[in-house]
View 1 (cartoon, rainbow, N blue to C red):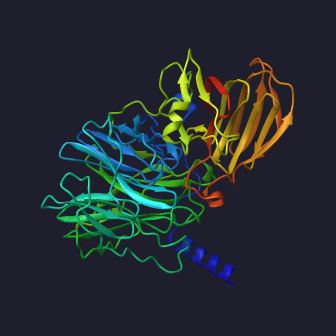
View 2 (cartoon, rainbow, N blue to C red):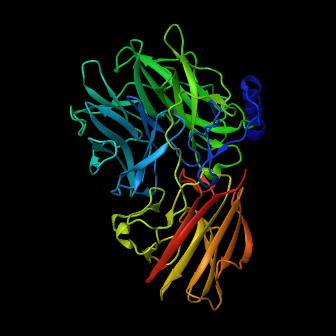
View 3 (cartoon, one colour):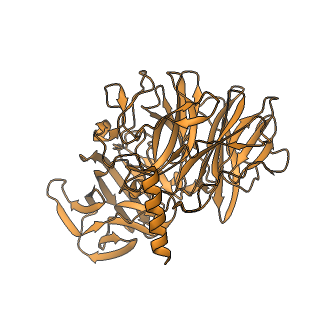
Amino acid sequence: MRLPLLLASLLLCIGAHATQTTTPDATWARGIEGQRKADLGNGSYLNPILAGDRPDPTILKDGRDYYMTHSSFFSYPGLLLWHSRDLVNWEPIGAALRKNVGTVWAPDLVKHKGRYYIYFPGLKDGHTTNYVIHADDIRGPWSDPIDLKIGDIDPGHVVSQDGKRYLFMGGGGMVPLSDDGLSVTGPQKKVYAGWQYPADWVVTAFALEGPKLVRHGGYYHMLVAEGGTAGPPTSHMVVSARAKSLDGPWENSPYNPIVHTWSRDEKWWSKGHGSLVEGPNGKWYLVYHAYENGYWTLGRQTLLEPVEWTADGWLKSTGVDVSKPIPKPGNEAVPHGMALSDDFSTDKMGVQWGFYQGTDADAARVRYEDKTLVVQGKGTSPRDCAPLAFIAGDQAYQVEVEAEISANARAGLLVFYNDKLYAGIGFDRDGFITHRYGIDRPQKAALPRKLRLRLVNDRNIVTIYTSADGKQWTRHSPVIEVSGYHHNVADGFISLRPAIYAAGQGEVRFRDFRYQALSN
């Protein structure tokens, strides 16, 4: 009986609240390497503002500039910072976190008395704590992480009217901070219990998370996430509450939820985890994350939605359809995005790259020589060698690289979710290795030490190729369907990413890495 009841609840929710169409009326603009971008060039934008896995966005307005960062989870370096002038076009600045403290979840980027801070949770070896890093210049250098010894998640920074600093935590707790923001000065106190959505809504769990606070119109306004960030498409939501004092009492908004996916037919699933910001036009906006319908593999992407204040001081949705073009908040744009191709001509790692579960020692595995990325092998396969991966935001793309192995080394090109789930091809002195479902299948063959590898991911259908000269290509079996390589199958809250790897005891020399988006 449980399945019919669940379906009936879902249909009731859809019938009461479905307001959006299933298919957008526009296609995305194209930027660097054909990557999709939000700015349509006609005064409007089409979500997402950052395609690909950019979850748990936290945004800072700093004069005419905007800065944003996201959860970086298993990727190191982490906490990549982005800069914008119009909230739609974003350029990367660089990674703020260099030291591995484990899995990095929802951060909060703030500025206080001229100094920048990022508060964030780190999960390592089953232990969760919270850290802060700081910098006098947003572009760095950033400090090493300082352990605040708070065993909760999703810190949200706020300053009271009397100048005292606090962190609000997932679960509704409030923790006092020192004046410099670098230590805790007292115990955590529960001040907020969340908003109780109807019992028949189809969500994953209550999951009170991601508090973000602003002061407006004589009130502190808090946004929180509820419902669970993945699972059913109708799980996630943004909830609002306000109070005259940080201690409460907190009054839930009559307009809750401010953002929510009502039906699986919508373009964007699991919309939630919002941060509020005033745009360059004086209007207010929410940035939040969502999964793209049919593309859990791309992870939670960053969306921008206009909101408004009511006459009696509540925040509410404007009712805009975020699957269609929306007027831009401003016209002063920075260059958007970054090239994902890499000719390895510099002496440092491009901001797109990150080691999966990389340790502090992994940086020493890499050096650059004459447009060549040289990586010391580690482990025996993608599961234990900390592949170098990057976030892709296109539904279809092609990646290609030349790999040259020394004796006892193994190289490969992949789409990589985690150490248990990946697909692609590798080779060593004994032959090819086909990777599928995270299983490594060797195939004996006499091969040169240098090959060009190509992988095409066309809407979750992966085809792999190799070439000895870059002209004549051999397609390898099998063609792999990867639409299930995502969190709801394998946990982890991340995305399926293009990756290169170097395993074994020798070195791999990578050259001329190319990324090209294919038309959607």
